Every structure is written in structure tokens, then in C-alpha cells.
Amino acid sequence: MPDVNHVILIGRLTRDAELKYTSGGMAVCKFALAVNKRRKQGEQWIDEANFFDIVLWGRSGETLNQYLVKGKQVAVEGELHQNRWEQDGQSRSKIEINATNCQLLGGGDGQRQQGNPTDSPEHVQDHAQKPYSKSATANEDGTPPDFPDDIPF
Amino acid sequence: MGARAHNSGKGGGMNALNSILIEGDLIDDPVTKETPRGSTVCTFSIASSRFYKQDEDFEEEVSHFDIESWGKIAESCKENLAKGRGVRVVGRLKQERWIDDEGKAQSKIKVVAEHIEYKPRLNKAVTHA
Image (cartoon, rainbow over all chains, first blue to last red; front, side):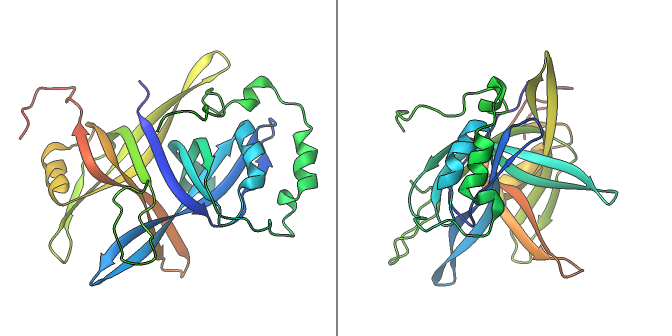
């Protein structure tokens, strides 16, 4: 039986999102969110930032990448996921969130940072013209890449 | 919008939405500790399964997550949990950051439990405390 695994976060991007493609042609959009936690220390409220890595697969990652700029506020819904790999004979792991839905909120109106080749529009366009199989446009788990906008919550 | 919003008086800032619901089975017995200030912390790791279809077969992918509970929830975890027990955790995500012995910045993502449900023990019937 699959286990329930559901995460909802609202935060701001710490840098521009990066769009890459797997060898199979699947789009992978990665970014980090700063999620503030306000707590009281003595008499003062202080903001504590938590940074979480988000992975947005497939078509939604590809289309949203251009709007996912540093400072942008977004709501992310997804699953917690552990990435495991070997490095120098040592097993390493990293926890990230596989987003199933990403809503753009506000802020981050500034320009994309220059000099990042994976971020330049030409590069994105170049890849966007590649044909995709049907499975590449859906999310990893087979659900459609986006939910309708009229969910009442 | 923000869960557990606090009124700071000025600035209008608040806690950003940060919520997780996750299920899994304990990989090991939980570890309970007391902090220097006297609060109880109970930590444990869970294995959470996800299934996906590859060609015609269903593949299982297991992720391991660290869960941390405090106070009364920690006491309850200490009472009820053991290796293999299934749990359902409602809480929030937390990032821990520290500098390791080599001076490198390290970080780790944990789930802080705000509510835990225990799944029935599968092997033998034991009454709840």
C-alpha cells in the first residue's frame, strides 16, 4: 500500500529556478524556497528561514520556469522524497519536495539574473522545440501536470 | 493563509504556510532525550513507500525521513513506538543547519510532528497505555 505523503509550503525563491532535461527528455525544474518561521526569543519576534529544495517535473516545470525568479512567492503542493546516491564510495542522501502543483503568488518582478546559460530564453526555447512523449508531459506519478484553477479553497 | 500566524505588532509578517501529512513505518526504535532546559524530544526515522508504474510493472520506491517530536507528543511516542510500528504524522518541515568538523556547512530536513496517530500493531495485540 502506498503511504500518504502530502506537503504544502508557501515561500519565496532564493534564486532563479533552473531548468534541465533528463536523458529521456523529461523537463526538470529545480529551485529552493525560503519558508519563514516566526518565533519569540525573549521579548522579540524573530524570523527563522528554512530552505527547502523543490523539483517540478514535466510540462509544468517547463512552463513555470520563466516565472520562477528570485524573490517570487509561490505555493507548492507535493510529496516529500529522499534522493539517494553514491559519492566517493559514501552513500549520500538529500530530502526534496517533488511538486505536483505550483501556484505563483506575488513578488519577484525583477529580471532574471544574467550569465546563467541554463536560464537564457534561447536555451529554453531550443529545448522546448524538442518533441515530447505523452508521458513526459504528465507528472512522474502519472497525474496531470496541473489542477484546475477553480478548486474552492 | 499562514498557519499559526502571530501578530508581531509591526511589519505584518507571519509564519508562512508549512504543513505535511506523512505515513510510514519506524526503521528503528525511537530515541528519547531531555534538552538542557528540561523538555523531552523523541526522534525516529520512518520508511515511506511510493509506487510508480514502469512499463507494465509497479515499482516500489522507499524514502527515509527523520521525525522529531516534543513535549507530550514525545512522551507518547516513547510509550507507544517501536521498530516496525506504522505511524501517520501531521506536522511541519524544518531545516537544520550546522557547521561540521571540517568547517563545511551542512543541512538536514526533518519533520516536526504536531500530531501523531499510531497504526495498529500487526504482530500481536497490545493495549494502549
